[in-house]
Length: 110
Image (cartoon, rainbow, N blue to C red):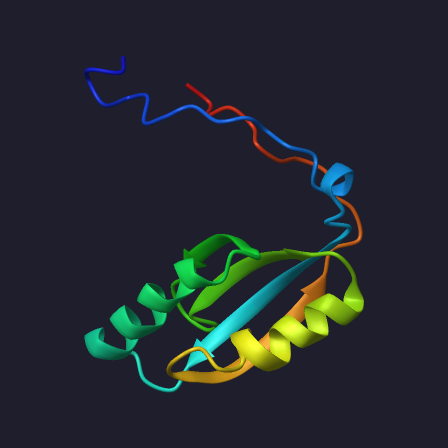
């Protein structure tokens, strides 16, 4: 399966709370423009922010969904103000705070 490219890698699943990452938010992003230059610029900036643990490009509005983890609300606010709002091409950010994780790191339904 590795040689066929089905298995792309291995990693340890770490419980965020055990390493002090007690705060989780979903951030929806709408870009000013949807052209390829804006999209590429925005997407290439995401790996520079380690608190973003998942990023999905969406059809429709909003354009992206980011899953962010931080130590606490204050850390999230600082990340939001300093990094997320400064991402290239951002028109609007909307955040939803995660109350509880129900399903995560599930195996694919093969």
